[in-house]
Length: 80
Image (cartoon, rainbow, N blue to C red; front, side, top):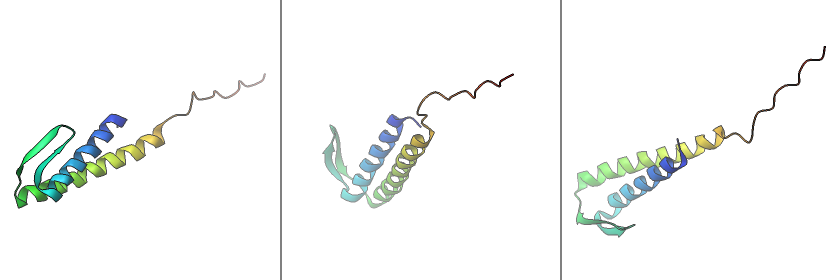
């Protein structure tokens, strides 16, 4: 997963958890949640927030294992 997608998933999950915890009426990064949300919406936001945070964290850890430090070295040619 590209780094920007993992960051976006993590931030979106954090905003959903903020909605679940506070319940609305806040402004973050220029986006505003003006209404108070109900209990069902808060539970759904909490579950979705946790899922997106896990996706963001999992994607950031797995991408680092796949990075290549440099070009692969070719084995030496056999001597005749």
